[in-house]
Length: 342
Image (cartoon, rainbow, N blue to C red; front, side, top):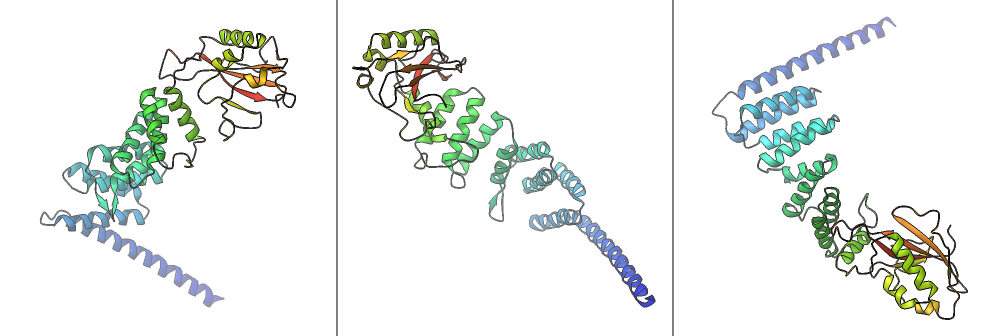
């Protein structure tokens, strides 16, 4: 037992001495490297290698703060160093790794807007910055700039189709609706627009298609208020005036489906005449709109359309089209739900 205790003590002493020696050696190496940087005769490539080794030495020894301080001071004192974008990238990456996203965003953005691009191991520093920025930035104006940079400068490295959708959404947040419409139009022109799956964005194709198609339509079926739309539809039903009902229906994206279906389903969009459902039928409607109606959507329960599916809920909604202030906020008859409400 004494032998084992003595051996353990000896090993512990050896490791302590070894660690101390290793740290001393590392410190000596850093000192030598830092002294080497004062040599004005160093080539650009040698100086890069020395700085990189110093920074990585700090990092691998758990001294990321010292690494950041060293690189920050170097960039400030040597504004003409062609590798400053890389040193700032190391700083930004360190802040990102430590959860300081806002500080990391500042450095990534600074590199992108103030320093020339560099290829490090075949990878563009500006592209890496943009990849990080679209993940951490919350400002729509900035994100619009970043997405446009990706589209214009790195089209082969990203999904252009996805970029146009994300651009459209950011433009909408900023109230730049004409730009959003242009981005949706560009998205629809891409060959994979109808099939692409974009993380975090549902029904991208359907949303874009509705927006663009509505923009290109006459919009002459809209009403200035829900009351005027409801009154006109009820009058046409009372008089069995199928021509007026056909006129009142939305000419873009009108749907007719069960409550369980979705507007994005292939068979949800319908283009039929009301004549075939009114002739010879006894159509009735409720005097009041359904209680689930709200300031943006309304439902009118009607009956008698068909022996197989007699109950139809006519769906009215407020037009959401801020591109055109004269149309935005009007009302349209947008669809039909078959059967009783679920």
